[in-house]
Length: 485
Image 1 (cartoon, rainbow, N blue to C red):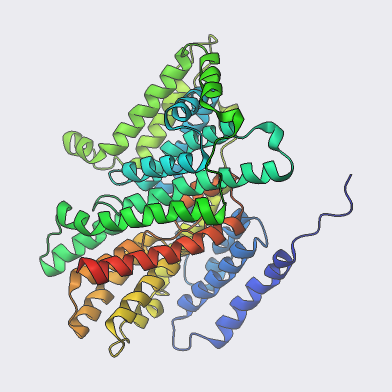
Image 2: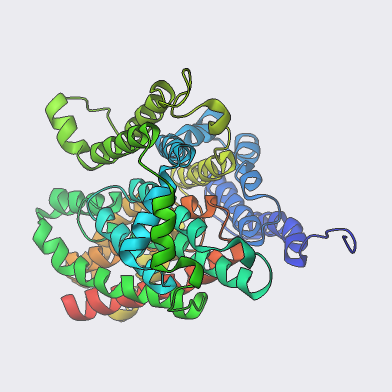
């Protein structure tokens, strides 16, 4: 029986008024000499940041603010503001989520989960580490978004297999909740960390390589990149694992009786032989994964220049609606009744983040951020590099790291020329730091995927993410600037 009405958390109630109030105050008192549109966009960014951090309203509702605020109060038309909500990354999410639903609908997720558990063992720390290692290795060579989409359904299935329903109350429930959050966040963080490892791991890496080639005639080879980035990955990945397992969630090093290998083998045997539906879903899932990995080669062979990850994901999703399941006569691998369980709110949330990022770039609101760097001509170099990493990491929580990388490259070039700095280490610090947005769901697609599972509350993600952000800054600046060069 309820003891009374479910009042909102105090921070939530304060946030509802604090967000618009801070936005109005900033617009009225700051930004003198700044273009009107830039002032509006930065005020909106403050408003959205407060609402996202305090969960004053549902996160997807906050994501609608650009559509309400920007068209009437700035020179940005509604179509311009709305177009990022239908960007390729949003449809990539949609296709990936449908693939995950088909895995669950067929039951293949249980078979994969139990097989993985039998192989790697069932200690909580061991499982988190195993998932992070596999995710990072995959993300070095393919999209971090695609990697998270491939691994996350398996992680969710492992969580389901490991968490005994009898532990739903009390301390057991808290332990199970912590383990679930550690798995989900570990996969998301490892996808971003793994993307640092190669020039093709994430778009900012490619942007930096292209800029150095075009403006400095520097061709950063795969080997040269990995000489710097792989040690960063090898330091940051275990440090993140240790923080999640020993500090944030304090996971047990031993397996629960319900997840011993004998029990898991018995559960796996109880599933019976692989069904036709499982085989067909697995084949489509594997085909999509291979196409994501080999997309550049496929484009080169076929000349289909418009083939991107979103097209591949949606093609796989459409196949699921067409291929028979092999169970009932007219049943398909995926039906719309099942597809309606897509996390539509997460698609809207990420669309709002993309819209805000596009507005920051279009209005020139990013100029004050980048102008800060060009004024540090008398500051010690190590301090500049540290401030650079901090700015890139925390500005990346609200803006696209790809957009931020594009905007920062010319400023970094001017900074290097003014101070006589080597170009490569400065650019490497900024680029690697761009992959370290771990606090907010809108910071990176893997974060949004993790938050979309419903297993990580916003405050929990922010606490863990802030610590990993600081660890990332320390590792990147400490190794790249002080050791690698």
